[in-house]
Length: 323
Length: 298
Image (cartoon, rainbow over all chains, first blue to last red):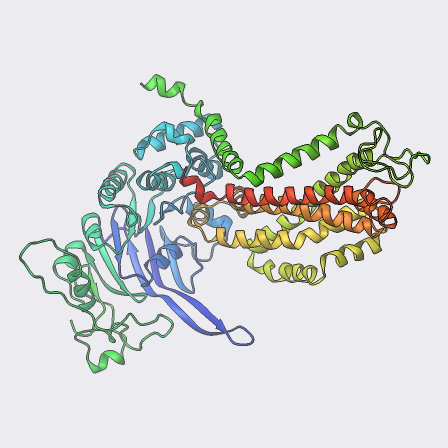
């Protein structure tokens, strides 16, 4: 797997938001939303990105799709730089990279019928006749488990799960190779979550899709993902296969995240690693290791030096001085 | 089963569209004041359209033997003015002027306001410039701005419409800009961007339909202001010139005879009041009826 060319690669990706203030609206400081993410995503895999809210996972997802301008670094898609392309040149790549959004109630235009929403994507990218497009939209609806009758419905007439299926249909309409699922199932209730995840898995096999699955739900990520990246305050903390992360977590932050998963085992009191203090502000970035302010095993030198991103076992990377 | 589905493929479309419109109308009809306002507006439109059929005298026809007849005279139901012109005829023809000026200047104002609002809301770079221009227009009191424009263009009813439409632009632009700013942040706009839709497509197909509700309300309310301002300007002698049967001009004509023939001013005054009231309550009713969040409850 490692020998092949990655589908998507980011090199030192940074996204800073300027904080402007004062009399002349000068940039006073930056919110460092994404710090130095270097990552390779291979064809056909599902990469999970986990971390607490505000750690930059969504920003990262949006930046690689070009929805946010990056501050520094580069993005390579199939080996080609796409970070500074104009909108027109990017359109070709946008067909290949799609996104499924978190909130199915906000991601569909409330005044547009489902059918016309899907049809519009085909209008933008495909030169097809109305009849051909109608046929494609019908097939799409059936493929994501909706019925033809939903073609004429408005979003507010559908349930959350059905809307998310429309969101999925929209993402696969152009037959992309990469889909970024930004908290794609977090807004759904558990039984619907399971159905949607099942659908995502089926589509992955049928269309040879690669997923970047952004979530705060570690249980779902474990179920769905081949590899998992843990992020903290915009930085990469640990990356490994699902197995490595869930059974052999090295970074203390990963450990505390995992211990926060509720396990309904009666009679067994689990050991919970509770972190002290609050998440530091991304505008006031800690020196050295970003995690040292809350780390249970922090040493003096953690405050000074940024930990190296090193491979501790094949495919298992971690950024910590102490492991 | 398969055949059935294919047969029903095109059918429900018309029904669904109707349903949404009907829902809005139903909600509007539940509001009694709005219904009253609608009735007044419909009456006004009927008066304007069928004016020649509804009157016995020309609004310009003078009859110096029958001046200042009071309300309830056998030949002239609403009396006559100081030249013996039938006030009912003048009132009915005045409806035409009010409606035409109202619709055209609101229309022009909307075109200008929508363009500026959409551009400044969507393109951050244009925002500063456009909003400063709008602020500039806002800085003048409305009537003063209209008078200024009329002073430049000359007094006529067409120039009144132009002046009032320019005065409508800043309000409309701000409302649209506000809606665009909130809609722009919605995920479905982000989704269209990630699909690769062009800016013009996003603005026209996705942002514009979603900010129509406040614009419809604004336009209705604006009709009231426009009709009132047209009359005010005509009253001041800046709009319709005599002998045009414009309501404001009619009030002005009557003010010299306030003690001897008060109906000359009071009748057009009541007409203006009723129409302004009607457009305002319908605007209020529409605001409630068009609230998209209420779609979910029905």
